[in-house]
Image 1 (cartoon, helix red, strand yellow):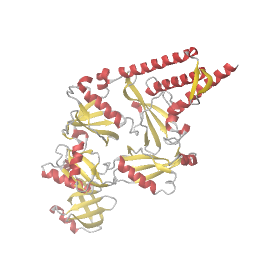
Image 2 (tube, rainbow, N blue to C red; image 1 turned 90 degrees about the horizontal axis):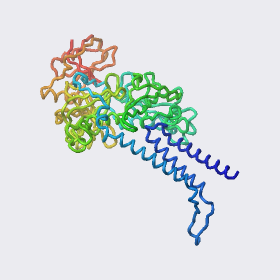
Image 3 (spheres, one colour; image 1 turned 180 degrees about the vertical axis):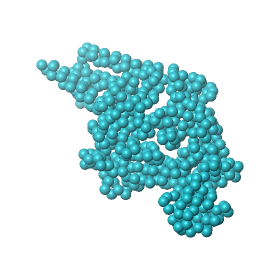
Image 4 (cartoon, rainbow, N blue to C red; image 1 turned 135 degrees about the horizontal axis):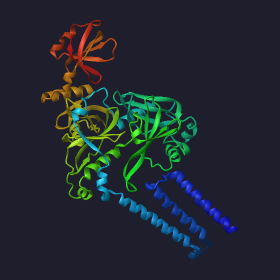
Length: 545
Protein backbone atom coordinates (compact mmCIF):
# COMPACT_ATOMS: atom_id res chain seq x y z
CA UNK A 1 0.00 0.00 0.00
CA UNK A 2 2.86 2.37 0.87
CA UNK A 3 4.56 1.57 -2.43
CA UNK A 4 1.34 2.25 -4.38
CA UNK A 5 0.86 5.54 -2.54
CA UNK A 6 4.44 6.54 -3.24
CA UNK A 7 4.07 5.68 -6.96
CA UNK A 8 0.85 7.67 -7.14
CA UNK A 9 2.52 10.69 -5.55
CA UNK A 10 5.41 10.65 -8.02
CA UNK A 11 3.07 10.08 -10.97
CA UNK A 12 0.95 13.05 -9.88
CA UNK A 13 4.10 15.15 -9.49
CA UNK A 14 5.21 14.21 -13.01
CA UNK A 15 1.84 15.08 -14.56
CA UNK A 16 1.69 18.34 -12.62
CA UNK A 17 5.21 19.29 -13.74
CA UNK A 18 4.32 18.52 -17.37
CA UNK A 19 1.14 20.59 -17.14
CA UNK A 20 2.90 23.58 -15.60
CA UNK A 21 5.70 23.52 -18.19
CA UNK A 22 3.20 23.23 -21.03
CA UNK A 23 1.09 26.11 -19.65
CA UNK A 24 4.16 28.35 -19.42
CA UNK A 25 6.03 27.48 -22.62
CA UNK A 26 3.04 26.57 -24.85
CA UNK A 27 4.82 24.35 -27.39
CA UNK A 28 2.89 23.29 -30.49
CA UNK A 29 2.21 19.57 -30.58
CA UNK A 30 3.85 19.28 -33.96
CA UNK A 31 7.02 17.49 -35.09
CA UNK A 32 7.98 20.55 -37.16
CA UNK A 33 8.22 22.67 -34.02
CA UNK A 34 11.70 22.86 -32.48
CA UNK A 35 10.07 23.88 -29.19
CA UNK A 36 8.13 20.62 -29.19
CA UNK A 37 11.35 18.60 -29.32
CA UNK A 38 12.89 20.73 -26.57
CA UNK A 39 9.73 20.22 -24.50
CA UNK A 40 10.03 16.43 -24.88
CA UNK A 41 13.68 16.55 -23.86
CA UNK A 42 12.84 18.78 -20.92
CA UNK A 43 10.12 16.40 -19.76
CA UNK A 44 12.52 13.45 -20.02
CA UNK A 45 14.99 15.33 -17.80
CA UNK A 46 12.23 16.07 -15.29
CA UNK A 47 11.13 12.43 -15.44
CA UNK A 48 14.69 11.28 -14.76
CA UNK A 49 14.91 13.58 -11.74
CA UNK A 50 11.60 12.34 -10.33
CA UNK A 51 12.55 8.73 -10.99
CA UNK A 52 15.93 9.26 -9.35
CA UNK A 53 14.34 10.80 -6.25
CA UNK A 54 11.80 7.98 -6.09
CA UNK A 55 14.47 5.29 -6.26
CA UNK A 56 16.95 7.06 -4.04
CA UNK A 57 17.54 5.81 -0.52
CA UNK A 58 16.08 7.96 2.22
CA UNK A 59 18.95 7.55 4.65
CA UNK A 60 21.04 10.70 5.04
CA UNK A 61 23.87 11.27 7.39
CA UNK A 62 26.44 13.96 8.08
CA UNK A 63 30.13 13.20 7.92
CA UNK A 64 32.25 15.31 10.29
CA UNK A 65 29.33 17.72 10.47
CA UNK A 66 30.04 19.15 7.03
CA UNK A 67 29.22 16.74 4.17
CA UNK A 68 25.68 15.67 3.30
CA UNK A 69 25.53 12.24 1.61
CA UNK A 70 22.76 10.33 -0.14
CA UNK A 71 22.71 6.52 -0.24
CA UNK A 72 21.66 5.40 -3.77
CA UNK A 73 20.80 1.87 -4.83
CA UNK A 74 22.07 1.88 -8.47
CA UNK A 75 20.82 -1.68 -9.06
CA UNK A 76 17.28 -0.30 -9.15
CA UNK A 77 18.11 2.51 -11.61
CA UNK A 78 17.42 0.66 -14.90
CA UNK A 79 14.50 2.99 -15.68
CA UNK A 80 16.88 5.95 -15.40
CA UNK A 81 19.17 4.32 -17.96
CA UNK A 82 16.31 3.76 -20.42
CA UNK A 83 15.10 7.37 -20.08
CA UNK A 84 18.66 8.56 -20.67
CA UNK A 85 18.87 6.51 -23.85
CA UNK A 86 15.52 7.92 -24.98
CA UNK A 87 16.72 11.47 -24.25
CA UNK A 88 19.83 10.94 -26.38
CA UNK A 89 17.72 9.42 -29.17
CA UNK A 90 15.33 12.40 -29.19
CA UNK A 91 18.26 14.82 -29.28
CA UNK A 92 19.87 12.93 -32.18
CA UNK A 93 16.60 12.97 -34.13
CA UNK A 94 16.34 16.74 -33.58
CA UNK A 95 19.97 17.25 -34.60
CA UNK A 96 19.63 15.08 -37.71
CA UNK A 97 16.38 16.83 -38.67
CA UNK A 98 18.09 20.23 -38.34
CA UNK A 99 20.99 19.17 -40.56
CA UNK A 100 18.76 17.59 -43.22
CA UNK A 101 16.59 20.75 -43.24
CA UNK A 102 19.49 23.19 -43.62
CA UNK A 103 20.52 25.20 -46.71
CA UNK A 104 23.80 23.28 -46.78
CA UNK A 105 21.96 20.24 -48.15
CA UNK A 106 18.90 21.92 -49.70
CA UNK A 107 20.33 25.06 -51.33
CA UNK A 108 18.27 24.68 -54.51
CA UNK A 109 15.00 24.23 -52.61
CA UNK A 110 15.69 27.29 -50.46
CA UNK A 111 16.58 29.32 -53.53
CA UNK A 112 13.21 28.51 -55.11
CA UNK A 113 11.02 29.36 -52.11
CA UNK A 114 10.37 32.84 -53.51
CA UNK A 115 9.17 33.59 -57.03
CA UNK A 116 10.58 36.88 -58.27
CA UNK A 117 9.22 38.86 -61.21
CA UNK A 118 11.33 41.57 -62.84
CA UNK A 119 9.29 44.70 -63.53
CA UNK A 120 9.74 48.26 -64.82
CA UNK A 121 9.99 50.98 -62.18
CA UNK A 122 7.95 53.69 -63.92
CA UNK A 123 5.19 51.24 -64.86
CA UNK A 124 4.47 50.20 -61.27
CA UNK A 125 5.51 53.17 -59.14
CA UNK A 126 3.49 56.24 -60.05
CA UNK A 127 4.77 59.74 -59.40
CA UNK A 128 4.60 60.63 -55.74
CA UNK A 129 1.32 61.75 -54.22
CA UNK A 130 2.52 63.85 -51.30
CA UNK A 131 -0.83 63.53 -49.57
CA UNK A 132 -0.27 59.81 -49.02
CA UNK A 133 3.47 59.62 -48.29
CA UNK A 134 4.00 57.95 -44.89
CA UNK A 135 6.25 60.48 -43.17
CA UNK A 136 6.68 58.65 -39.88
CA UNK A 137 8.93 55.75 -39.01
CA UNK A 138 8.13 53.58 -36.03
CA UNK A 139 10.23 55.67 -33.66
CA UNK A 140 8.46 58.90 -34.57
CA UNK A 141 5.08 57.18 -34.35
CA UNK A 142 5.97 55.99 -30.85
CA UNK A 143 6.73 59.57 -29.78
CA UNK A 144 3.32 60.72 -31.05
CA UNK A 145 1.58 57.77 -29.42
CA UNK A 146 3.19 58.39 -26.04
CA UNK A 147 2.42 62.10 -26.28
CA UNK A 148 -1.23 61.33 -27.02
CA UNK A 149 -1.37 58.87 -24.14
CA UNK A 150 0.01 61.50 -21.79
CA UNK A 151 -2.95 63.76 -22.58
CA UNK A 152 -5.54 61.10 -21.66
CA UNK A 153 -5.81 61.73 -17.93
CA UNK A 154 -8.49 59.06 -17.47
CA UNK A 155 -6.26 56.30 -18.91
CA UNK A 156 -2.62 57.25 -18.47
CA UNK A 157 -2.41 55.99 -14.87
CA UNK A 158 -3.78 52.56 -15.79
CA UNK A 159 -2.54 51.85 -19.30
CA UNK A 160 0.45 52.45 -21.53
CA UNK A 161 0.93 52.31 -25.30
CA UNK A 162 2.04 48.95 -26.70
CA UNK A 163 5.06 48.92 -29.00
CA UNK A 164 3.30 47.20 -31.93
CA UNK A 165 2.68 50.23 -34.22
CA UNK A 166 1.66 48.08 -37.19
CA UNK A 167 1.71 49.94 -40.53
CA UNK A 168 -1.42 49.23 -42.55
CA UNK A 169 -3.66 50.79 -45.19
CA UNK A 170 -6.86 51.96 -43.53
CA UNK A 171 -9.62 53.47 -45.65
CA UNK A 172 -7.09 54.28 -48.35
CA UNK A 173 -4.58 55.96 -46.02
CA UNK A 174 -1.26 54.75 -44.60
CA UNK A 175 -1.60 54.55 -40.82
CA UNK A 176 0.03 52.91 -37.84
CA UNK A 177 -2.11 51.24 -35.18
CA UNK A 178 -1.22 49.91 -31.77
CA UNK A 179 -3.29 48.80 -28.78
CA UNK A 180 -2.94 50.02 -25.25
CA UNK A 181 -1.61 47.58 -22.68
CA UNK A 182 -1.87 47.23 -18.91
CA UNK A 183 0.71 49.37 -17.11
CA UNK A 184 1.49 46.68 -14.52
CA UNK A 185 0.14 43.40 -13.10
CA UNK A 186 -1.70 45.41 -10.43
CA UNK A 187 -3.33 47.59 -13.10
CA UNK A 188 -4.31 44.40 -14.94
CA UNK A 189 -5.93 43.07 -11.79
CA UNK A 190 -8.12 46.15 -11.41
CA UNK A 191 -9.03 46.57 -15.11
CA UNK A 192 -9.07 43.16 -16.81
CA UNK A 193 -12.81 42.61 -16.30
CA UNK A 194 -13.61 45.49 -18.68
CA UNK A 195 -10.57 45.00 -20.90
CA UNK A 196 -8.33 47.48 -22.70
CA UNK A 197 -10.56 50.44 -23.64
CA UNK A 198 -8.83 51.86 -26.74
CA UNK A 199 -6.15 51.75 -29.39
CA UNK A 200 -3.99 54.45 -30.96
CA UNK A 201 -4.40 55.37 -34.65
CA UNK A 202 -1.76 57.57 -36.32
CA UNK A 203 -2.17 58.98 -39.83
CA UNK A 204 1.34 58.73 -41.28
CA UNK A 205 0.76 61.45 -43.89
CA UNK A 206 -0.81 64.15 -41.70
CA UNK A 207 0.65 62.93 -38.37
CA UNK A 208 -2.81 63.23 -36.79
CA UNK A 209 -2.97 60.99 -33.73
CA UNK A 210 -6.25 59.62 -32.41
CA UNK A 211 -7.13 57.51 -29.40
CA UNK A 212 -9.99 55.35 -30.64
CA UNK A 213 -12.19 54.36 -27.70
CA UNK A 214 -14.10 51.09 -27.98
CA UNK A 215 -17.64 50.34 -26.84
CA UNK A 216 -16.32 47.00 -25.57
CA UNK A 217 -12.77 46.60 -24.34
CA UNK A 218 -10.01 44.44 -25.85
CA UNK A 219 -9.99 41.25 -23.76
CA UNK A 220 -7.43 39.23 -25.70
CA UNK A 221 -3.97 40.72 -26.04
CA UNK A 222 -0.28 40.12 -25.44
CA UNK A 223 -0.47 41.95 -22.11
CA UNK A 224 -3.23 39.72 -20.68
CA UNK A 225 -2.53 36.95 -18.20
CA UNK A 226 -3.76 33.38 -17.88
CA UNK A 227 -6.25 32.08 -20.46
CA UNK A 228 -6.98 35.46 -22.06
CA UNK A 229 -3.35 35.96 -22.97
CA UNK A 230 -3.31 35.94 -26.77
CA UNK A 231 -0.64 33.25 -27.15
CA UNK A 232 -2.35 30.94 -24.64
CA UNK A 233 -5.77 31.56 -26.18
CA UNK A 234 -4.45 30.57 -29.61
CA UNK A 235 -2.54 27.55 -28.32
CA UNK A 236 -5.59 26.01 -26.62
CA UNK A 237 -7.70 26.64 -29.75
CA UNK A 238 -5.07 25.30 -32.16
CA UNK A 239 -2.70 22.97 -30.26
CA UNK A 240 -0.86 21.77 -33.41
CA UNK A 241 -0.37 25.17 -35.09
CA UNK A 242 3.11 26.70 -35.04
CA UNK A 243 2.36 30.41 -34.86
CA UNK A 244 4.83 32.96 -36.13
CA UNK A 245 6.83 34.90 -33.57
CA UNK A 246 5.18 38.12 -34.78
CA UNK A 247 1.43 38.47 -34.29
CA UNK A 248 0.14 41.67 -35.89
CA UNK A 249 -2.42 44.08 -34.47
CA UNK A 250 -4.70 45.41 -37.23
CA UNK A 251 -8.12 46.96 -37.67
CA UNK A 252 -10.63 46.22 -40.41
CA UNK A 253 -12.29 48.95 -42.49
CA UNK A 254 -14.88 49.50 -39.74
CA UNK A 255 -12.21 49.97 -37.08
CA UNK A 256 -12.74 46.62 -35.33
CA UNK A 257 -9.47 45.43 -33.73
CA UNK A 258 -8.05 42.04 -34.73
CA UNK A 259 -4.91 40.03 -34.19
CA UNK A 260 -3.49 38.64 -37.43
CA UNK A 261 -1.74 35.38 -36.50
CA UNK A 262 0.32 33.73 -39.27
CA UNK A 263 0.84 29.95 -38.99
CA UNK A 264 4.25 28.69 -40.02
CA UNK A 265 4.61 26.20 -42.83
CA UNK A 266 7.85 24.25 -43.24
CA UNK A 267 8.56 23.23 -46.82
CA UNK A 268 11.96 21.56 -46.43
CA UNK A 269 12.48 18.65 -44.03
CA UNK A 270 11.48 19.02 -40.39
CA UNK A 271 12.50 22.60 -39.71
CA UNK A 272 13.49 24.25 -43.02
CA UNK A 273 11.99 26.49 -45.64
CA UNK A 274 9.57 28.43 -43.45
CA UNK A 275 6.73 30.30 -45.14
CA UNK A 276 3.09 30.82 -44.07
CA UNK A 277 0.40 28.19 -44.60
CA UNK A 278 -2.60 29.53 -42.69
CA UNK A 279 -3.68 32.73 -40.99
CA UNK A 280 -5.86 32.88 -37.89
CA UNK A 281 -7.79 36.12 -37.41
CA UNK A 282 -8.61 36.62 -33.73
CA UNK A 283 -11.14 39.28 -32.78
CA UNK A 284 -9.34 41.20 -30.03
CA UNK A 285 -12.62 42.00 -28.24
CA UNK A 286 -14.49 38.70 -28.33
CA UNK A 287 -11.65 36.23 -28.86
CA UNK A 288 -13.49 34.65 -31.81
CA UNK A 289 -11.03 33.01 -34.21
CA UNK A 290 -11.39 32.28 -37.91
CA UNK A 291 -8.82 30.12 -39.72
CA UNK A 292 -8.00 30.97 -43.36
CA UNK A 293 -5.68 29.33 -45.89
CA UNK A 294 -3.11 32.00 -46.69
CA UNK A 295 -4.47 32.49 -50.23
CA UNK A 296 -7.98 33.26 -48.90
CA UNK A 297 -7.08 35.96 -46.36
CA UNK A 298 -9.52 38.94 -46.56
CA UNK A 299 -8.36 41.92 -48.60
CA UNK A 300 -8.31 44.31 -45.62
CA UNK A 301 -5.56 42.28 -43.95
CA UNK A 302 -2.16 43.82 -44.70
CA UNK A 303 0.31 41.88 -42.54
CA UNK A 304 0.70 38.14 -43.13
CA UNK A 305 4.40 37.81 -43.94
CA UNK A 306 6.72 39.73 -41.65
CA UNK A 307 9.33 41.98 -43.22
CA UNK A 308 12.07 39.88 -41.64
CA UNK A 309 10.71 36.68 -43.18
CA UNK A 310 10.38 38.24 -46.65
CA UNK A 311 13.89 39.69 -46.66
CA UNK A 312 15.25 36.34 -45.45
CA UNK A 313 13.47 34.52 -48.29
CA UNK A 314 14.83 37.04 -50.79
CA UNK A 315 18.35 36.54 -49.44
CA UNK A 316 17.99 32.78 -49.94
CA UNK A 317 16.99 33.44 -53.55
CA UNK A 318 19.84 35.84 -54.21
CA UNK A 319 22.67 34.14 -52.35
CA UNK A 320 22.02 30.48 -53.17
CA UNK A 321 21.81 30.78 -56.97
CA UNK A 322 24.81 28.51 -57.51
CA UNK A 323 24.64 26.41 -54.37
CA UNK A 324 25.61 26.78 -50.74
CA UNK A 325 29.38 26.54 -51.10
CA UNK A 326 29.44 29.22 -53.81
CA UNK A 327 27.60 31.49 -51.37
CA UNK A 328 30.44 31.04 -48.86
CA UNK A 329 33.51 30.74 -51.10
CA UNK A 330 33.34 32.06 -54.68
CA UNK A 331 30.14 34.13 -54.19
CA UNK A 332 29.57 34.37 -57.95
CA UNK A 333 26.34 36.27 -58.81
CA UNK A 334 25.39 36.43 -55.12
CA UNK A 335 22.97 39.23 -54.24
CA UNK A 336 21.33 40.16 -50.96
CA UNK A 337 19.01 42.75 -49.50
CA UNK A 338 20.58 45.78 -47.86
CA UNK A 339 20.69 46.18 -44.11
CA UNK A 340 17.31 47.81 -43.72
CA UNK A 341 13.80 48.04 -45.12
CA UNK A 342 10.77 50.30 -45.25
CA UNK A 343 7.15 50.06 -46.33
CA UNK A 344 5.33 51.27 -49.44
CA UNK A 345 1.56 51.50 -49.89
CA UNK A 346 0.80 50.13 -53.35
CA UNK A 347 -2.35 48.64 -54.91
CA UNK A 348 -4.16 48.71 -51.53
CA UNK A 349 -1.48 46.52 -49.95
CA UNK A 350 1.60 47.12 -47.86
CA UNK A 351 4.85 46.17 -49.57
CA UNK A 352 8.27 45.80 -48.00
CA UNK A 353 10.93 47.77 -49.82
CA UNK A 354 14.64 46.96 -49.68
CA UNK A 355 17.61 47.64 -51.89
CA UNK A 356 19.54 44.80 -53.52
CA UNK A 357 23.33 44.76 -53.44
CA UNK A 358 26.17 42.30 -53.91
CA UNK A 359 27.52 40.34 -50.97
CA UNK A 360 30.95 41.90 -51.48
CA UNK A 361 29.91 44.88 -49.38
CA UNK A 362 30.24 47.63 -52.00
CA UNK A 363 28.24 50.85 -51.66
CA UNK A 364 25.96 50.45 -54.68
CA UNK A 365 22.63 48.82 -55.41
CA UNK A 366 21.91 46.79 -58.51
CA UNK A 367 18.21 47.38 -57.99
CA UNK A 368 15.52 47.11 -55.38
CA UNK A 369 12.80 44.68 -54.46
CA UNK A 370 9.16 45.07 -53.38
CA UNK A 371 7.56 42.21 -51.43
CA UNK A 372 3.82 42.06 -50.70
CA UNK A 373 3.16 41.38 -47.02
CA UNK A 374 -0.23 39.79 -47.71
CA UNK A 375 0.50 37.59 -50.75
CA UNK A 376 4.32 37.21 -50.78
CA UNK A 377 4.35 38.52 -54.39
CA UNK A 378 7.85 39.79 -55.11
CA UNK A 379 8.94 42.28 -57.75
CA UNK A 380 12.50 43.21 -58.68
CA UNK A 381 13.36 46.53 -60.34
CA UNK A 382 16.73 46.93 -61.99
CA UNK A 383 17.77 50.43 -60.95
CA UNK A 384 21.43 50.95 -60.25
CA UNK A 385 22.44 53.52 -57.67
CA UNK A 386 23.64 54.20 -54.16
CA UNK A 387 22.64 51.98 -51.27
CA UNK A 388 20.40 53.49 -48.65
CA UNK A 389 23.23 54.01 -46.15
CA UNK A 390 25.12 56.13 -48.68
CA UNK A 391 22.03 58.22 -49.41
CA UNK A 392 21.41 58.70 -45.68
CA UNK A 393 25.01 59.80 -45.18
CA UNK A 394 24.72 62.19 -48.13
CA UNK A 395 21.60 63.80 -46.62
CA UNK A 396 23.17 64.00 -43.16
CA UNK A 397 26.21 65.68 -44.72
CA UNK A 398 24.01 68.58 -45.81
CA UNK A 399 23.08 69.30 -42.18
CA UNK A 400 26.16 68.00 -40.41
CA UNK A 401 26.45 71.23 -38.40
CA UNK A 402 23.06 70.43 -36.85
CA UNK A 403 23.81 66.79 -36.07
CA UNK A 404 20.54 65.47 -37.53
CA UNK A 405 20.17 61.74 -38.24
CA UNK A 406 18.35 60.38 -41.30
CA UNK A 407 15.64 57.74 -41.08
CA UNK A 408 15.72 54.74 -43.40
CA UNK A 409 14.43 56.13 -46.71
CA UNK A 410 11.24 55.60 -48.65
CA UNK A 411 11.47 55.06 -52.38
CA UNK A 412 9.51 57.54 -54.50
CA UNK A 413 9.04 58.21 -58.19
CA UNK A 414 9.66 61.90 -58.91
CA UNK A 415 9.76 62.87 -62.57
CA UNK A 416 10.33 59.17 -63.33
CA UNK A 417 13.50 59.38 -61.24
CA UNK A 418 13.86 56.83 -58.42
CA UNK A 419 14.29 59.04 -55.36
CA UNK A 420 15.04 58.36 -51.71
CA UNK A 421 12.88 60.37 -49.33
CA UNK A 422 13.77 60.54 -45.65
CA UNK A 423 13.18 62.54 -42.51
CA UNK A 424 16.03 64.16 -40.58
CA UNK A 425 15.62 63.87 -36.81
CA UNK A 426 17.36 65.57 -33.92
CA UNK A 427 18.79 63.85 -30.84
CA UNK A 428 15.39 63.70 -29.15
CA UNK A 429 13.83 61.89 -32.14
CA UNK A 430 11.82 64.84 -33.45
CA UNK A 431 11.61 65.41 -37.22
CA UNK A 432 13.27 68.71 -38.08
CA UNK A 433 13.80 68.56 -41.84
CA UNK A 434 13.15 66.39 -44.90
CA UNK A 435 15.53 65.25 -47.59
CA UNK A 436 15.28 63.87 -51.12
CA UNK A 437 18.27 62.08 -52.66
CA UNK A 438 18.46 60.82 -56.23
CA UNK A 439 19.07 57.05 -56.24
CA UNK A 440 21.35 57.01 -59.27
CA UNK A 441 23.16 60.28 -58.50
CA UNK A 442 23.22 60.44 -54.75
CA UNK A 443 25.15 63.72 -54.78
CA UNK A 444 21.85 65.33 -55.86
CA UNK A 445 20.38 66.21 -52.46
CA UNK A 446 17.51 68.55 -51.61
CA UNK A 447 16.71 69.64 -48.05
CA UNK A 448 13.62 71.45 -46.75
CA UNK A 449 11.96 72.36 -43.48
CA UNK A 450 8.66 71.13 -44.92
CA UNK A 451 7.63 68.68 -47.59
CA UNK A 452 6.69 71.57 -49.84
CA UNK A 453 10.13 73.18 -49.55
CA UNK A 454 11.92 69.87 -50.05
CA UNK A 455 9.81 69.03 -53.09
CA UNK A 456 10.39 72.47 -54.61
CA UNK A 457 14.16 72.29 -54.06
CA UNK A 458 14.35 68.82 -55.56
CA UNK A 459 12.24 69.77 -58.59
CA UNK A 460 14.53 72.75 -59.21
CA UNK A 461 17.53 70.46 -58.86
CA UNK A 462 16.10 68.07 -61.45
CA UNK A 463 15.23 70.93 -63.80
CA UNK A 464 18.75 72.29 -63.48
CA UNK A 465 20.02 68.91 -64.64
CA UNK A 466 17.62 68.73 -67.57
CA UNK A 467 14.99 66.42 -66.01
CA UNK A 468 11.37 67.53 -66.32
CA UNK A 469 8.53 65.92 -64.39
CA UNK A 470 5.99 63.97 -66.40
CA UNK A 471 3.37 65.51 -64.10
CA UNK A 472 3.46 68.49 -66.45
CA UNK A 473 1.17 66.43 -68.67
CA UNK A 474 -1.26 65.92 -65.79
CA UNK A 475 -2.18 69.46 -64.77
CA UNK A 476 -5.65 69.42 -63.22
CA UNK A 477 -8.25 72.17 -63.50
CA UNK A 478 -10.72 73.57 -60.99
CA UNK A 479 -13.25 76.40 -61.17
CA UNK A 480 -14.96 78.15 -58.29
CA UNK A 481 -15.62 81.32 -56.36
CA UNK A 482 -12.74 82.74 -54.32
CA UNK A 483 -13.49 82.34 -50.62
CA UNK A 484 -10.18 83.75 -49.38
CA UNK A 485 -7.04 85.15 -51.00
CA UNK A 486 -3.92 86.41 -49.22
CA UNK A 487 -0.34 87.29 -50.17
CA UNK A 488 2.56 85.65 -48.29
CA UNK A 489 6.31 86.00 -48.68
CA UNK A 490 8.36 82.79 -48.82
CA UNK A 491 12.15 83.08 -49.07
CA UNK A 492 11.84 86.58 -50.52
CA UNK A 493 9.27 85.59 -53.16
CA UNK A 494 5.63 86.71 -53.06
CA UNK A 495 2.99 83.98 -53.26
CA UNK A 496 -0.78 84.21 -53.20
CA UNK A 497 -2.69 81.57 -51.28
CA UNK A 498 -6.18 81.01 -52.70
CA UNK A 499 -9.10 79.11 -51.15
CA UNK A 500 -12.18 78.30 -53.21
CA UNK A 501 -15.72 77.80 -51.95
CA UNK A 502 -16.64 74.14 -51.50
CA UNK A 503 -13.13 72.74 -51.09
CA UNK A 504 -10.63 72.68 -48.24
CA UNK A 505 -7.64 72.68 -50.62
CA UNK A 506 -5.22 75.61 -50.70
CA UNK A 507 -3.77 76.75 -54.03
CA UNK A 508 -0.31 78.35 -54.16
CA UNK A 509 0.30 80.99 -56.85
CA UNK A 510 4.03 81.74 -57.15
CA UNK A 511 4.49 85.27 -58.56
CA UNK A 512 8.05 84.50 -59.66
CA UNK A 513 6.23 83.01 -62.67
CA UNK A 514 5.26 86.12 -64.67
CA UNK A 515 2.39 84.30 -66.38
CA UNK A 516 0.61 84.17 -63.00
CA UNK A 517 0.82 87.88 -62.12
CA UNK A 518 -2.83 88.28 -63.10
CA UNK A 519 -3.83 86.81 -59.72
CA UNK A 520 -3.31 90.22 -58.08
CA UNK A 521 -6.42 91.55 -59.88
CA UNK A 522 -8.73 88.98 -58.28
CA UNK A 523 -10.71 89.60 -55.10
CA UNK A 524 -12.82 87.55 -52.71
CA UNK A 525 -16.12 86.44 -54.29
CA UNK A 526 -14.92 86.46 -57.89
CA UNK A 527 -15.08 83.42 -60.15
CA UNK A 528 -11.74 81.88 -61.21
CA UNK A 529 -10.37 78.80 -63.00
CA UNK A 530 -7.02 77.42 -61.89
CA UNK A 531 -4.78 74.87 -63.58
CA UNK A 532 -2.76 73.19 -60.83
CA UNK A 533 -0.58 70.25 -59.88
CA UNK A 534 -1.30 68.35 -56.70
CA UNK A 535 1.18 68.76 -53.89
CA UNK A 536 1.53 68.01 -50.20
CA UNK A 537 -0.76 70.40 -48.33
CA UNK A 538 -0.59 73.03 -51.09
CA UNK A 539 -1.48 72.67 -54.75
CA UNK A 540 0.88 74.48 -57.10
CA UNK A 541 -0.96 76.70 -59.61
CA UNK A 542 0.39 76.63 -63.17
CA UNK A 543 -2.34 78.47 -65.07
CA UNK A 544 -5.02 81.08 -64.37
CA UNK A 545 -8.11 81.52 -66.57
